[in-house]
Length: 459
Ligand code: ARG
Image (cartoon, rainbow, N blue to C red; front, side):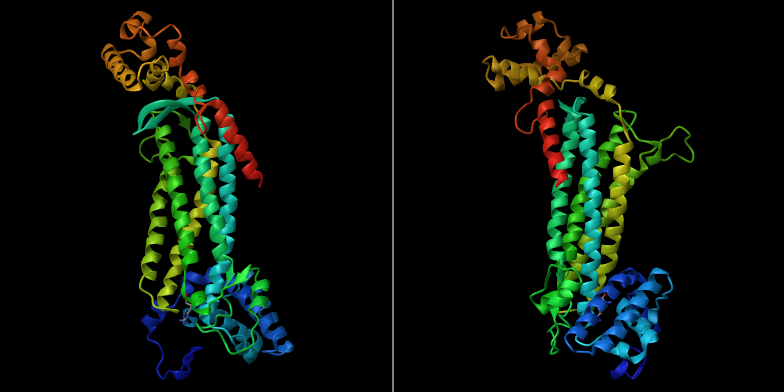
């Protein structure tokens, strides 16, 4: 017999390097509070069902509460020799209340215990993510409200395409973040399930009350199958996948911020609070935070791929491989929560250079579609209109002018269908205003989207 909690059938103690290798306490300390919460519910249930006496349940609960207090005061020292969070806590409970601490593990295994901790932890992380994401969605709606009259060139292939309303651009991200939000909400359905009472894999012979622990821990239901409860980590994978999708959206927005604050675009100016300088080039003001968010997307994807790979060949039920679910999940949670705060701060403090955006729409051919549409409304087949406008663009490029600079005579020569009213159509503001199709970039359409978003945010 060795000193370990599981040492009964062992004759020799664990090799030191092996002990270090197998121990998870160094990275799972943050589960301590949740572990104690799970134990408190379990102890109460053991008392309520008569598996331990009321008095024993009371002593155990008091001991656990004292540990909670010591934890909050930073007085608990986690030890590698106690391997993981569960055995560290049990070790201190024994120091606190003596051998009766040994009754706490009745009808329980570390397998259901760790799964419980992870569900409790992730539930709190997802709630925090939802809150921060809602704040970011609100910031985007506020930006859209402020810029429902701002126009800029819209791009495809990063080439000027058609003029758009800036509010439309921000509302596009609002929509993406709203779907991300819904994905996290859905994820909660799978996180909000209680694994406690599954025991090692097969349930238990003790008359436990899983409904009671479910209620005490605030879960909406208990796992129906004990093997499933201790074997799967799909609720974490779903979180990692949702986080990856969200990071992808954030990263795209960051890429645009980086472009937009470049000398070439000058569409926005980031606040000093969210920019950094260069150690050699005195003039520099870099969008480091946007770049870092774009960069951190990589590790979030990596954590998803890492755990998917860990899981793919595991036979039921618990395997030690599952311990590898933690570091990536913690890393993604920490990254996501930080990123959401920084992103919101960066977006809500940036300055939009409204005049530069509008000016840009007068210095391109993003009104070429207007001209083709104008001709086809007058009866010319669109394909034909497309071709002659293309020729006119080529002509302008050679002459160094834009479509609005072409004289009416020249337009008449191009097609007799063209009248003086063509210049109004070529005005980028008019081009935006006229795109009133459902979801289009027209100012009134963006206003309608904002109205809808505001009512979504009130929910
Ligand atoms: N540290 C383990 C984990 O993270 C806890 C469960 C250990 N269970 C076991 N049978 N070894 O998964």
